[in-house]
Length: 210
Image (tube, rainbow, N blue to C red):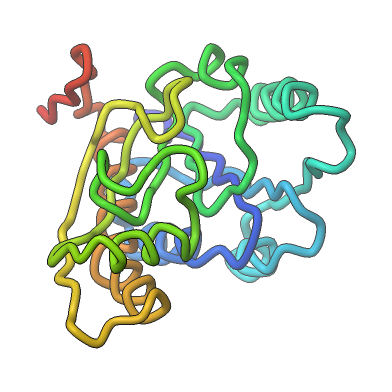
């Protein structure tokens, strides 16, 4: 029997995308992957509670314990290696990691972003700020993007995208919720499954799905 792909999910908060991955795993939809660990950058993150309920080991590598993002990134890479992880998923992880993480896991770190990249992404575009910007611009479609993480913020090769209609009376909060439910919670488990099945190849900026 082939060995399962060991996944670490990195979180900072409530862990709604983590829950979507846990649910997919429980339905047998992670394509031979298993969530081996949930690592929080903050003490007391609710995501750790979700992991514990699902019987998944959780730990904390707190950002505030380190002098810089780089020192924290080096510690995170050590932790991931110790856990023998093959895929790293950033699910609402609010730390900007430095290049050591990408060097240790080239094309093996995924992030989900709540917009259709290259719109409303990059520095400063996180959480509700993304949806405020989309509404201010007047777009009729927004959505979610799963991409591999590169050294450029939100700039790595795109694995999957799903569009969601923007409604006339949307607020940043209602749009955020709909994008989570209709896009993020669907495309993230699908992208993880494709990776774990060995079906993703990166060719320059393009991710080819075999």
